Image (tube, rainbow over all chains, first blue to last red; front, side, top):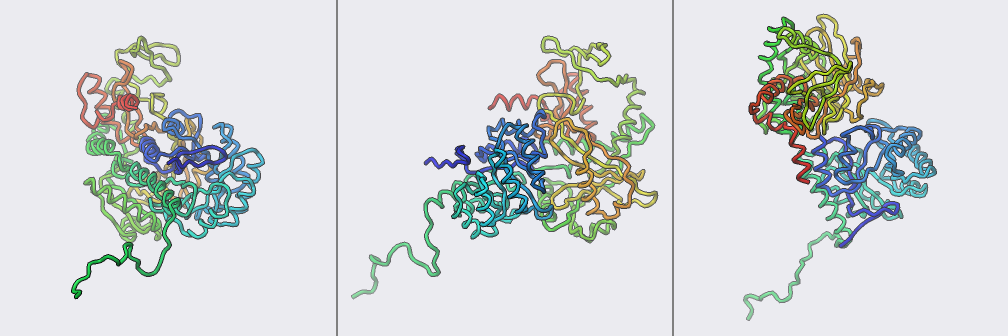
Length: 259
Length: 325
């Protein structure tokens, strides 16, 4: 069954988007990327030199994944704009994962600067995928500002705490008419599966794979988790109930001791 | 730092084997260099203390320790207070640690000058110039120096680190700081490596009072500029572990490029060009691996068979991988 999804008109076969931070070495990263089946991988513009030989970008090229530059490390809308423009020049892509964080302790998105940057980047012709809080109101504002996708966090970056507010994620999904990508907080496969069960269109994760004891195996687990969660979402789950209900009826059981 | 245990990343078993081999022979190597040159190398068998700052760091350090122990490495788990018995100037917030008794240290600058002198005494001619390898019909025939002179040779050994420009070797920028501890008031007795909110920092106290704080790891091509952000972050994390660092004199900031390879294992051996022996791609372990690399080069140059640890470093491993695709 083909179950592609698209962002800004571009179709992807895999609903798993990955990041590159935290891998022990390039070989490990390349094997993990291949195992994950991902087609889109985000790279921090502040941490790579696109022209450098043997760089991360060559690894991504070899693994056949598309590069999604991001503005990690930016604290103001202005920094995010400058960084995104540098990325467009260096990498020749209009796509950007917009990240504007409030402080180093939480790395939570700064709502005001984020919206400001999103409006300006959209005006500048960028395809903006906005990393945002699990706030349904802000997600809607970003969509209305013209973002191509909204990417609410499950939990703060790098915490691996999973999805702290599933209700809000479901609410964002319900009201969004652009793709919703769960970004940040995924610690293990069940977190990724839950995101898809809640109706997210895709999941973005990095350290859950790159920092795992066996990154390649965890990448495989994530690929399956995303597929499983998506299938469960489409299949329609049974309602939860308090008391047991046998799956077979009582009728037709043998009767003992009858006259 | 000579840190086979602490630099270990899961899945890098070949690199661990090579580094352990190098560490086991390092004391004899340092003694030989000193006896030939008459100069010190700064080799100190002081061990390393790895510490964690918050609960998340402690969990990760404990996971790393389990992986180290499962490979049979000698690592001892400590509480925060036990860490502070060993190093009383650690921040009271340090909440756990690992003592690695066999990860020692050497002063790379002292070692380099001692090796330089030892080489001269042994009749080695140093020509400190840029140059390029001459290749004719797929075979290395010598080098051409920057001043235009050509030196012919049957065998060329390329050991120029990140500048080697060889196949899969890339520059990985590292920024470090040098601070000075007052006489008789060394803030640390041994190498301390810390996890500070999942960021890595190390502090290496030298006997001469120097305290080295490092290091960033940046994939940015050939860029040797020191940045304000890196100095700030290194000092911030060093100070979080050892508050007294703020009182020290900041003597030097520096950025250099390590030669990184795709699997973090060096390239030692013959590659595609006949007569060209590679010894590069040592990444974060160049000083530790200096002697085993030199021995391997000597063995390979005379047509001998290297040990299995060195054989794993053959540059041909990348050719095989490319053909397998």
